[in-house]
Length: 139
Image 1 (cartoon, rainbow, N blue to C red):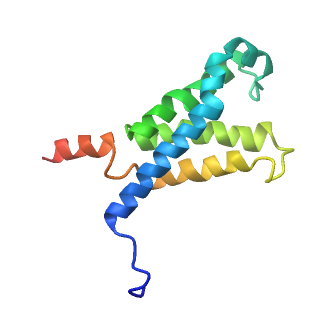
Image 2 (cartoon, rainbow, N blue to C red; image 1 turned 135 degrees about the horizontal axis):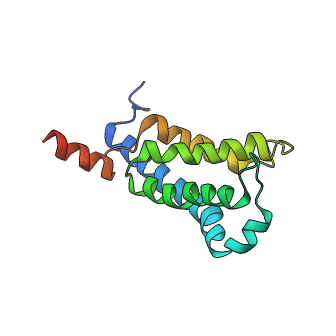
């Protein structure tokens, strides 16, 4: 790289991961998770059951991923592990439930997969509870 366009430094990468974690988790929680909690009974009537395990199971799995895991990801606690249920729910949604959607119609879901896939691959960064725990274990 030239001096005009220096490579990212570690603090910039950690700030980027913090922003990605918090903004992605907020969007998932706010758009998908919180409404499922607030309108649980109504959601039970409308949620798909792609594997025949019952709508209650499907809804609880979605709530776990979109609420519990979203909060863990925002905090940077068990981040990579918490990303897996989110990715699982998104994959089922995009590849099994909403197969008729074009990329344009499903762009929010695909973007969430990119965000949480990146978090799963890169980890939470320095500004996370995972990093604090790791520093305490090492030190």
